Length: 236
Image (cartoon, rainbow, N blue to C red; front, side, top):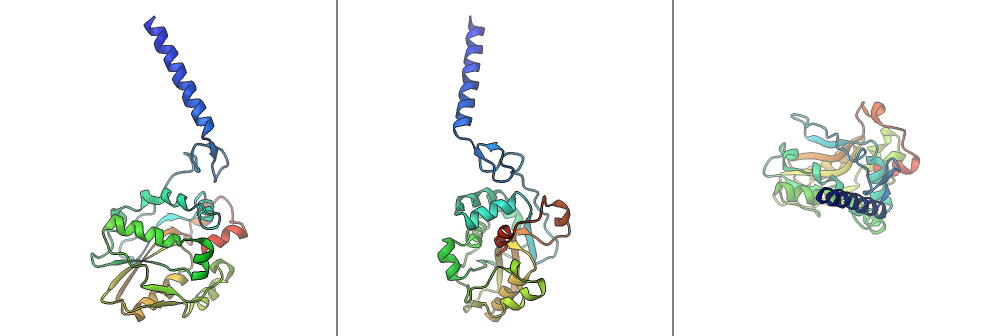
């Protein structure tokens, strides 16, 4: 009698779990399979990049699927809450290359982009990094004074030209080391333009961290398919 009751309860529990899963199912944004989260379990993995010893530029993840699709949905479809999926890579250990005197500064976006999008994803990342490391955050040190088209629409040799005199740094007020934070690193044009502005403002050491690294040789082998023209906009 007791055994039969236990089996009945187990069947009821499984049926309940199944009904709950069905009720809260959605579609994985990467593979379009049914999932209880916007990324299914096989797609939600983090092949994190190791720290590059001695380098002032670091990145957390390769810019491949499903991350291209996820980042595109964040920036262009209002899915800001999906940024939280990247919190596991924002650990203090990932930033041990920084000096204790560093200040965390997000790569700014133009006010017209901010008005359209409603937020700066790099600022969100920078705030989480500052919280995880205990380093100070300054979202006003660097300013983008001119709206520019996405870097992906430019030829590689033109990307650096298009960002000349686009960023300005206010008086650094004694800040000697800065960690620049951005979502994607491609040609390095944005980083170099921001670094130049920071040095003009008196900053002596500039480090760079991006959530994604897009120009590694392995990308040609790892990515599932070439991004669509619409997805390429996510690079800016």
